[in-house]
Length: 378
Ligand SMILES: [Fe+2]
Image (cartoon, rainbow, N blue to C red; front, top):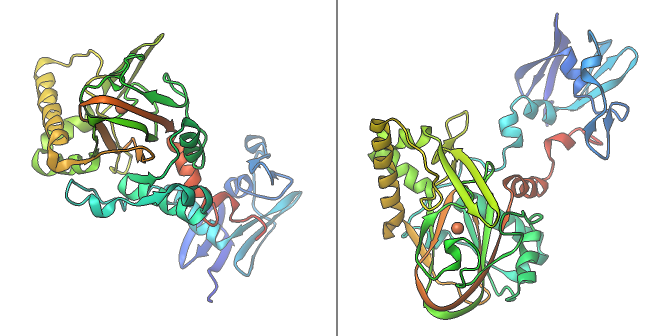
């Protein structure tokens, strides 16, 4: 194996280090700020103990040495700073270092979804970390995973989701049951068709993952419908760029009024990150709050929303599947829209939410070495 750190020297303002053939430069303050010695960094809490902004003028270092694949920076009157090549290579691109969702998430439609849905057995999901990792990766890549043979109790549903993270509470509580009894102020509690939508358009931070688990099915109809919002975005971008643009720009308010709450949040239907990647789809016609733009722009927005609504109702874009007792699906609420066909009879479902960051956290913990721990014990 060749040495990864090939040069390290002081500059007028900081440290220059060459890792994997690329020179990286860090101010002296950064080097001290990122030291992981136990005096300045709590080893168990993984928290910085140093009061960075009380260090005053930092540097130059007393000594800089390359020891194998580690860089050692020694200071007068302060513990030395040690970094592995891996840490130095990754830390300068935080977007890559911390990103676990990635962009390798090909979209699907009614035809291609069948070959993409992974079905996992309940027992294996609970007991086998490799099965869990694979299931989470399926949610990441495809937006969903299916579970079979989940005992038909609320507690079993909770256990499955807690295998990923703690349950996110909401206006509906932690575990919410859907029966056609109209007990909560939501169309989910009726037997009516529910057109595809995202949950939590009225939350600043919409639920990341969501589950639906069938406890009882004594009905006709009531298939679940999932739509890949990324596919809809691709079609709009290709065929209706003006609609894509306005849906990416205009923040639409969502609201939830009922059960003692009045929640409102705003964001565009298609939300992008700073690099221009689509990161979240937020569409819910039922929950859209009253608002008006200047007339011409409002008409343009209606046209774009109409195109979006038409595409999500197009059977060619829908994954429709009947859930029976013991069937459970976990899906990405930042990407997939969900709906349900009308039914007659009794249908008893339970669902819950997980936060986005907790889903990401679980995937990060299943990776061998989170960035913050790279220098740990190296
Ligand atoms: Fe919903």
